[in-house]
Length: 171
Image 1 (tube, helix red, strand yellow):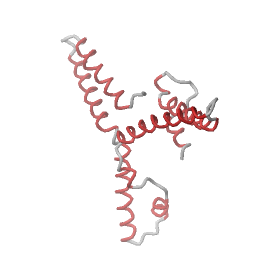
Image 2 (image 1 turned 90 degrees about the vertical axis):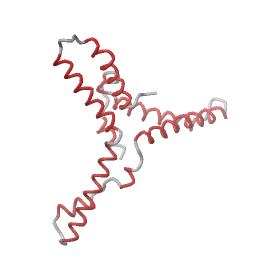
Image 3 (image 1 turned 180 degrees about the horizontal axis):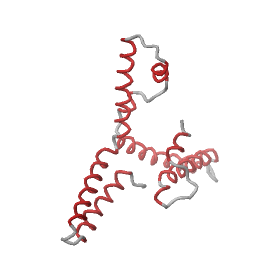
Image 4 (image 1 turned 45 degrees about the vertical axis):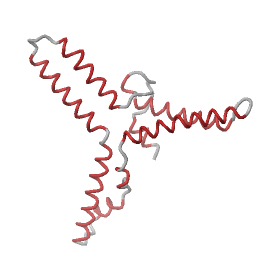
């Protein structure tokens, strides 16, 4: 299992408080202060990270609704207002599902996908070539996403795309 960003942040926070803080000398007041600041920042990231996309969608919808109402109140034909209201954006329902729920469902689907693949592969001697092709394609996309996601960690291929650019290609 690949750890989520939240799990990685929690691990960093644990190492900081359980390993670094006890190793600091009593006289290192500034270092202690900085560790507390880093710890508080990690706590904030852990709490907020999972909700960042949902927050952005809710905020987007709130401003879109208000802008639409203002434009109707003054019968605005300002091009920039019309253009932005005609652009595609996330629907309000995209903010309904918390990240941890999506992650849990995806993990369940991964297990079920593997189970069905094993069943299909066992049906014929030599396996089911269409099932193998489908699984190979899925695996290639997964490796591409993971390589992109972890490219800054130094554990992946050097040619991995930045995650934002890669995900843009999935639109």
